[in-house]
Length: 483
Image (cartoon, rainbow, N blue to C red; front, top):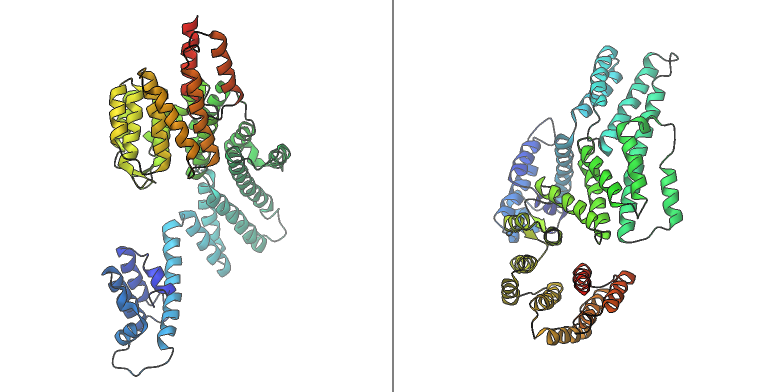
C-alpha cells in the first residue's frame, strides 16, 4: 500500500508534524475513535518505516500482520482502517492550517458567531468593538484580510437584524462597502497580473486593455477609491496601461511604490516589483531606465526578496550581474557574486554558471586576459551558456584586437547555422550577431562615418540581435573617433 493516499500524505510530514498528529489522534477532543489504538498504531508504523526509508514494509500483508497480529484475517478490514485513518488525518490537516494561518480577528469572529447563536448579545457587542480596531489598521491587507473584513460586516448585519430588527440600516451599507472593497482589491490585483503577463507574452488587444481599465473604475463612487490604497491602485493602473512612459515619470512611480510598500501585501508588492523590473528591461536601451532597473534589483537583493530558502535562481543571478556590470557597479557586483556563489539554483551546473558570470565581470572591468582564461577553462554543459560563451569570446577578441577574431566569427556563424537544439528566434539573434560583427570589423567601417550611421540605424530598425547594447556602444565609440 505504498502508493495509497494515506502513505503519500504522511510522507510529507516533518518530525514535529508527525508528533502533533499522534497527539491529535489520541485526543478525545479531536477524534471520535481516540480509544481505539489502531489508527495510532497504523500511523506510527507508517512514519517509522518512512523515516527509516524501508518502503518494503508498507505492503498490505506486512502492515496487516503488524497491526492485527495474532488475529484471524478479515477481508477489507485493513482497507477500512486506512480509510478511517485518512479521514482523521485530513481533519488534522484542517486543524493545522487553521492554527497556522488563522488571524486573531478570525478567532474573534468565530466567537461572535457562536455567542450570537446562543443569544449572548452583550458579549457580541464587545467582540465587534474589538474587531473594529483591527478593521481600522489596513496595512498589508490582501485577499484574506479583505474577505475577513466583509465577513465581519456581514456578521454585524446578521446580528443587528436579529437584535434591532427594523431599526436603522442593520449595517447593510457598511457590508456593501466591505464587499466593494473586496471586489475592487481583487479586480485590480488580477488586472495588474494580466497586464504584466501581456507585456511579456502579448495576448490582449488594445480594446481588451481599454475595457479592463474601464471596468476597474466601477462603482466610481466607491469608498474604496477614497482610501490611500484605492488611490494608489488607480494611479498604478494608468502606469501599467502605457508602454511609452518617460523614464523620469516611471521613476516617480517606482519611488511612490517604494514609499507605499509598508501598506501593500507582500504578494501584491512582488507583482508590482516584477512589473517594474520587466518594464525597465524592455526599455533598458535608455540609460535612465537602466539606472532605475539597477536600483530596483539592488533593493530587491538587499531586502532579501530574491531568495527562496536562501537560494537565488540562476536567471535572476545572471540578470543582476549583467545589469550591475552595465552600470559599472563593479564592487557591488563582485560582492554579490561571491555572496551567492553557493546559492544558485535552477541550473544543473551552478559552479560553471558562476564561472561564466565571473568571465563577464573580468570582461566588463577590462581584464580581457583573465576573462578569456576563465571562459576557456570552464566546462558548459547547458547549450544556452555554450553559445553565450562563444559570443563573449568574440567580444573579448574584438576588444583585444586579436588576429584570430575573423576566424572566431566564421566558426561561430557555422556553429549557429548548424545548431538544431536551439529555438529559431534565439538562433536568428546569434547568427545575426555574427553577421553584424563581420560588418563592424571590416577595415573601411571604422573610418566611414556614413557607414557607421547606417549600421546604427539598422540596429534601431531591427533590435532583435544578440548583444544589442554592446554593439551600439562599439558603434558609438567608432562614431566619436570618426569626428
